[in-house]
Image (cartoon, rainbow, N blue to C red; front, side, top):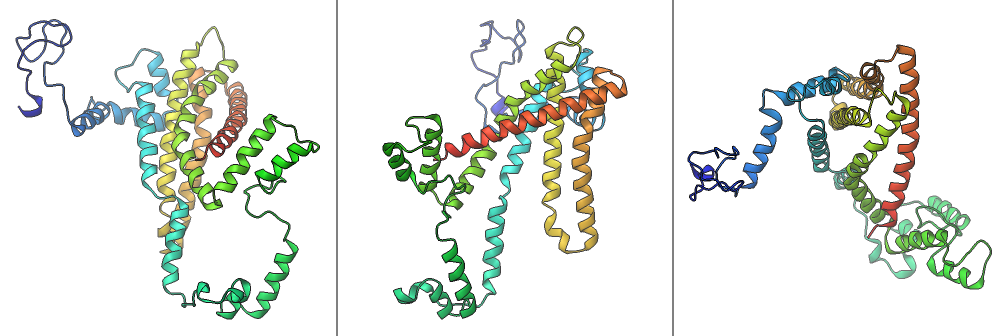
Length: 356
């Protein structure tokens, strides 16, 4: 029986009863070898969602094409016919961000495309091979990269923008952290020692001094993408709370809004994955203009469907009249848009200030 072999001592690890058969007659636990391979664990994890009376596919179909049907079924007591809302969200979240992480980001694609194009470009001498006095813009002119006219124009532009700090992502009014420290010591106006503002300024300037813009963008995008699922998971209770504020508190408990939120966010994650795959079809657009229109149409329909879905789902779940439901839905949407945008800004700031 291999990896599914029965344990030799025939004693149930759960209740210490002697086991005569494969399953314990007291608690029902299977008496098999507990050490499993990663493949065995993963395959069982996947089968839980796909092999139980087609519950997984039935759940996905209703989630996508029957707004609020899963939430209403769960609240009515039909909890074995579909997947559990929490397990459903965790599984979809894992699959969505796991697949997205496999694809290179746009900056990598741009670099690859640039490298391919450079193969067909004419070869110019390295500027490092020139004498010191010939390097810079004059060196580029000497090796034939730019003309003398362009040389004069670039010099003029550089002269006019000489005082601009081009290194920082955002011009904070200070060249570096040493300048900020000296202003603190001299007691300059609007510079308060040990203030919260100065703490963030120092953190920001330190990051800009220790990293190039390319390094900042790369590390920020990777950290943001890695932690975004956590932000989404943390935000769901806030979304459910806003629903609670707008609906009958005697008829609906917070638990009811939480179930609706889990299903709605699961739907959003599936649509994000679908739109992600649609976006990856861009290389095919050069084959035919028709494919370009198909790509644009599919992406537009997907985005509009994500926006529209909440309105019928809200009306069907809470049972309000059409106009009242629309007013509530629009209010909930706008409030969540504002709150989630504020949280994203704070999360982006936190991510940036914690770059290594």
